[in-house]
Length: 170
Image (cartoon, rainbow, N blue to C red; front, side):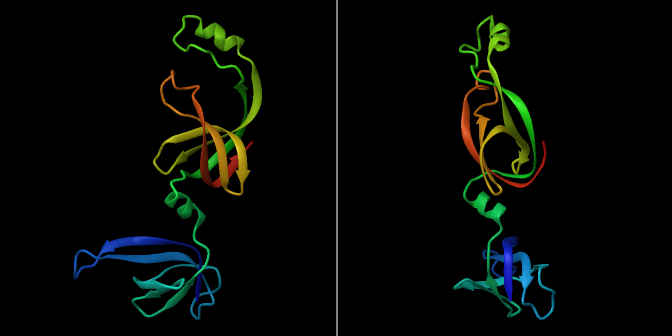
């Protein structure tokens, strides 16, 4: 049998030793005598993984195909956004130089703008991420996002790579 788009799930402590963690794997199964191709399953506890094959406590062997991309992204420290929206927005070309100056409102009014495609969504930590899309490669986006939360940090933009499970809008 083969598992595609798989990921580890159900981490728990072994009841006998109380130290060893037990894992299961969830994914889409193919070439199974029991399930149709592409059926979602969760394996029984994994005993070992050897040469790309997961062996379960019940004796089943699963060839591990492609790992779930969202999980891979998280393991690499890339924020994952479950659902994002794209929209067009006017962007400032010349942000104000001194955000503490008394004429901030006038500087904002006089700043030049251009249109950019924006991405907005909530990452797995629950934080809202908003940024201009600089590049897209499949579900991976590079966005120019705000580096801080205060008004002083608002225009300190940095490039951030994110993984988006599904996108709508625009």
